[in-house]
Length: 317
Length: 100
Image (tube, rainbow over all chains, first blue to last red; front, top):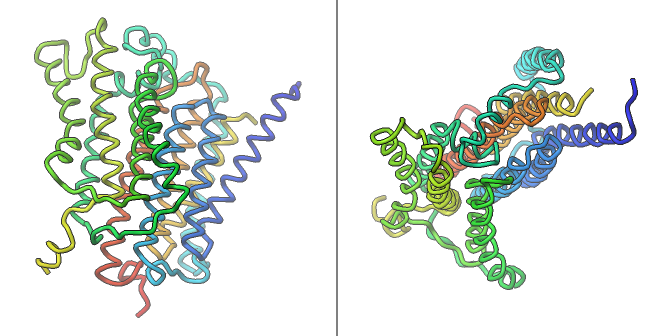
């Protein structure tokens, strides 16, 4: 067996990164302070984004860093702040082994070994659906295979995904537990950075949408960047995303345009969301643009959504 | 020992850790963190399976991208539920986990 130095060092790096990821996951679940656990989770998300790069998934790396680590981390930290020191207190030894936990752990370990064995015995090289995806790529309207899979081959999934996002925003609105946003002293560094970063994030988000047809990028990554800019603004000047008509229109537009495109193609074309080959690129771009606006709006609404003002709610109670 | 195998096994470990944390944790925020770790493990498993191909199989990538976005919306909803429960019941734990 002849392993050259380059691939041996690459494997060493992968082994180290994987070990670090697993150790971080264990650490964040067992550390007593929830704030520390959340910070570890954000670091875990960024390391997993590195793992995506090593696994040749740059689109995922972009989305993971922005949404998985960034936005999820912001949501967790915001919730911790709202819970307060009393609500965020947890026991000193969070996952201490009790008899029932040990029994559950044994079962999970058994399940894990079966899973690991099945992963080990898989063939090391297998084309999966890559061949069919590449053969159909010239007719799909884009040249990035992941975007083709997302917006063409599995377009029904993406339509439902945007609907799931909308449902989550509605759920957060309904549960709304936050009074009107508090006025906080503005961090001077943020005050200088935000007017620069927010326009940049909008431009870069739009660019990612456009370039997603040929290179890593797309609607989700662009939306995540724009939402990140909006979260920055919220940090400097807190706002609440109320259910005004304009906001509802923005949230509903993604699903509406997507579904409408499908219906139009069903009635006048070859089938639901079956794009005509010559114009497929433009159909995809149009749907993606509205989807990006909606996804960005939903991500911001998940972060800063508030259905009613404090006065209206206190009047009901 | 290949790159996909390393990350596949790491994914399996993350799935186990996430499952254990989800079932065993007391505080709901920790359960939500464990749920996210479980999701990361599943994604890692999917992507490492896809990385065995060249050119890379794009369909699992699209699935994981969908999964990342759905995971963040599920997390946001779960956090909203947690905030509401903490506001109404003054505890970050489910009723069966609270101190009597």
